[in-house]
Image 1 (cartoon, helix red, strand yellow):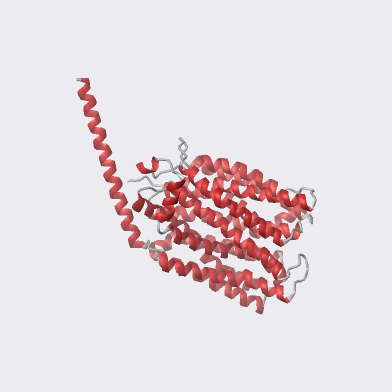
Image 2: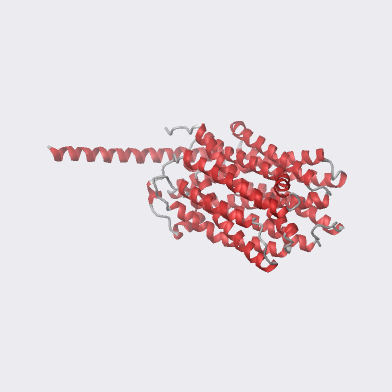
Length: 474
């Protein structure tokens, strides 16, 4: 029987998510507005830059998944890359927000290069980090925990950066927002490195790869794994719809609360602070609810609650746009569902890893989790592209009072589109996902029988070899 994971390992794994999601939050939440409102970059330029960077990541993420799957070291597959990626990405983050004095054209080139490098180097540590989940435990309840704990820490990171970010920027830079963001990025980079070191030194792989997994992973095998495992594309489509909805509303919230509601710092901070606490509550409750409720029911809640919350936020925007209580209540409803979905996506992708071993004979964690990282980045590209092009199309003017058309367009981008995408997740799940609770447990039982048979065969072979050795000594 597999040894249970210690709480030290579980918490150390979660601390790594706190650091890396602080990095992702400062970029996802603020970088677009930093460029359009503080650096006065054209929204179309920003949209094209974000989309082009994520398209390049399609190649980068896939390549990184193969590299990690082929890694063999005494420290395991994952930890070396987590450490390397963290150190490089921290440096690039600082450079990306650096308060450099360049002409508009030179700055566009500079920030373009830095942003592409940021995406590439984030991949270096993000893929191996999440790829560790199915390698840490094969126990279903422990996997629910190990999926929920890092999401909890990640929500803490988003809470800190989202609710306190603008105040931290003001503290570091006063009225000079570019200087404030530069110093904020340095602080986040330092926290990132410390958190990753905690994970690297305290978390080790427990689930040993099968004999088939000891073979090198080739590009041909990668394509075989992705297309022969029929559940991969289903999960990735769900992840795409969810992440576009989530990232679009997150990245657009600053614009919405400043230009539609007329309050920047206060309402945005309340909305994101409540979001963080609601997500953490959902993440803490998920392992317990997972024992009492079916995965299907939890998935329904994960999709329906955000859709309802977005519609309530739309209504509040007309009735009482500056009412902090209404905004907070809407944020609670939205983000309880989002908290559930953050865990469920990790859980069902881990189930797809097991299903791949059941169907194809190999686990290939890094290949499958690299596709998730790519989907998250693709969603970021799509959300940024929609935001940037949308701002241009609706007639947005930075730091000015917006027209009625622009306000209506912001409501659609921030609220209506994410609500529709959350319901699309539900449709894909019911149409395509086949690993229900009973089916998945049957697969795990058969995998356990297979591995037991392989171990017995190895033991018999080793015993036979010992007898031969004894005979040779006589």
